[in-house]
Length: 310
Ligand code: SD4
Image (cartoon, rainbow, N blue to C red; front, side, top):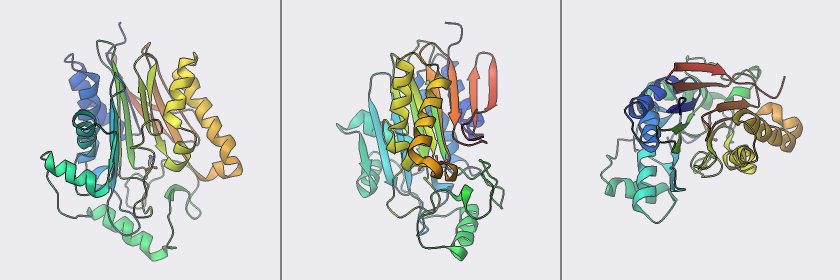
């Protein structure tokens, strides 16, 4: 097929992540390797709120969630994982080396260490420290799950944090390799200043990520609770199975969230990216400001997603 391989990922961080994924895909590599290598770039970067440089929870601790899914319904995830640089790679080991799909907290960390991953020192990046100090000043001691919409900040997402860091915390990626196989990945430090122990949609197969090799794949970003509530990524894939294009499928899922949330929809952001088996891609967001990156043989492109709330 002429439009293969292809990779799509969320937000501006997707531009750099796609490069690493493309390196795998353009050398006839497997989509699974591409989506792992791709998001590892974001996990290791300073400039984005994913991985150990991400914002902490309200207790000042960075806890990471990730998941991965291949072309055969194999899938793995980790949640509430601390002090491990590449949660996506641990998620892959969960998929490949255990009979399970999801490991959390201490058990996930123990597994990672047993698999040879380095236990990094407890750490908060300078940027995260600054963000956290600032949050603490006003901190109503309750979870702030979507800081974009705090105070009088207009709902224009992604909003620039005062220190210049982007106020979103996740990368989701779906790729199709030259053989036509699909895989997906998703990794996050979760919503900034969440309750300690809170787990979002990103490590949950069917919510933050889903891949059906016959149909397509989808990854989610935004307020995880509301993605979980509708079984987000899985439902987008089901809409594609019914014949909707990736964008139309993402739109229908966003509309579902909007109708569930009613007047509260304006207080959150959710977005989906999707890639269908025929090589078409699409995305849709609840609010303005969601961006995504697509790389094909024709080069790398960056898009503003269509959105629901005008
Ligand atoms: C979560 N969905 O933990 C993630 C957060 C996110 O941009 O996507 N932020 O709920």
